[in-house]
Length: 198
Image 1 (cartoon, helix red, strand yellow):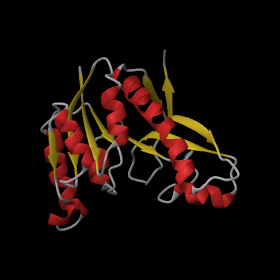
Image 2 (image 1 turned 90 degrees about the vertical axis):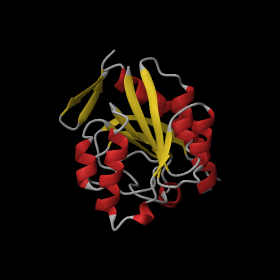
Image 3 (image 1 turned 30 degrees about the horizontal axis):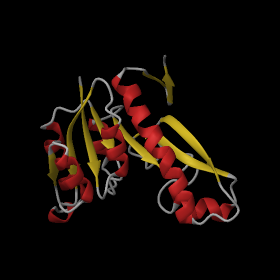
Image 4 (image 1 turned 135 degrees about the vertical axis):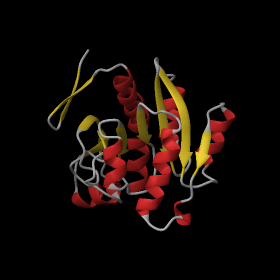
């Protein structure tokens, strides 16, 4: 059984998708947020999952917050830490502590459109396909080894909202599968490539 700690900042729809997937061999050890009133914490508590919050505004800088967050996370003995809409840029010290066991999902086909406003930028650039990427987190934002990707079409009449909604459907499918592959030891790192066995 592998312990999974999920970090959220809001409703945590990807967290919900992972929990609802009931991944064999996975135990959702805790859901943690940097916002005490995050909707996702209530959702997790209602399902008997341990929850905690840590307000980043109460710390002097990212380093202090991340150090406290590491202590909190490590109390749950995580095999995998999952970022599911956790809206904080993490320090290299944090990222390196969980190297190759810290996952994120990003709403674009990386390496295109890193950072924020991905759907607006994709539409502005006129791309015909967009999507989402699950990747291992490194110190460089949205630049870690790619685990899995899903593609969605960009329609002529799309807005950022309609493209985001179409992409979110794929996120909810792709992220639980990537977590399941990690739990089942199907992911093999070869340089920057992540290979899936089986």
